[in-house]
Length: 300
Image 1 (cartoon, helix red, strand yellow):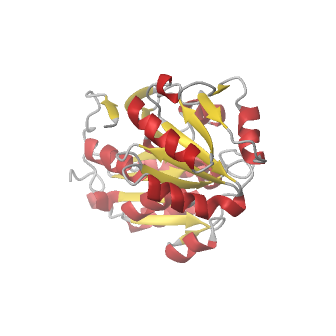
Image 2 (tube, helix red, strand yellow):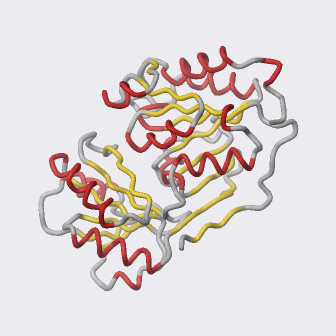
C-alpha cells in the first residue's frame, strides 16, 4: 500500500474560497522561455482578488519547480510530482506527500527492466529530484540528457533494488518510436498502479512513462485539495497542454487546453491561446466572466 502523509492543520479558509483554478506549468503557464508572462501574472492576481484559490499542477519535483518559480508568484498551492506532493505558498509547507513502499518499488522496477526500459527511481519527497538509474545499453538520448542535467543528484543502480527503500515514483524514458508500445506494455504489466504518459520536457518527442501509487494523479490530488478547502467540484477549472493533464482536465468542471497542446487534446477540450500568447489569462477571463458574483463567496 502507498505511504500517504497529510498535514492535519490544512483547513478550509473563512469565508470559503469562491473556487479553485488549477494550471499546468511547463507549456501552459510558462512561455517557451520558461518565464511567467505578465498576462498570466495579472490573471493570477485577478483570480485571487475574486477569492479563488490558485494552484499549479506540475510533473516537476518541488526542487525543479523552485528553479523556475519566484517566491512572490501569486499561487496558493503547488501540486507537484504529478500529484504525489502538495506544498502551500507562501512558506513552502508540504501538506501532503505520497510514496511507494519498498516492496512496490521492487515490483515496478522489475517489471520495467523486464520490458527492457531505461528506468529512474526517485527518492521520497522532498528529495524526489534525487534518483537512481539503470539503462540497458542502447541509444536513448533523452534518458542520457536527463542524467546529464541531474548529474549531481543521480546515481547508478548497480546493486539489488531491494536496498533502495520507498520512492516517490519510477520513470521509464522511451524513444519516440517506442513510446506507444512501451506505454501499453507497462499498463498491462502494472494494473494496480497509476501509470501516466508525459511528453518529454527535454526533447519534446520522447515519452516518459511515470509510475505512482494508485492514489496519485493530478486529478486525485486536486480532488483532495478541493475537499479540504470545501470547494465544490462545479467551482473548479483547469488549464493544461499535455497527456499528463488528461485526468485533471476530465475531473474539473471547466477545462481548457492551450493552442500548443497536441491535436488530440485540442479536439477534446475547449482551446485558448498558446502559452506564448496569453492562454492562461484567456482561460481565467473566460471562466471569471461566467462566475456569478453573488455566489463567489458562498460556502458550498
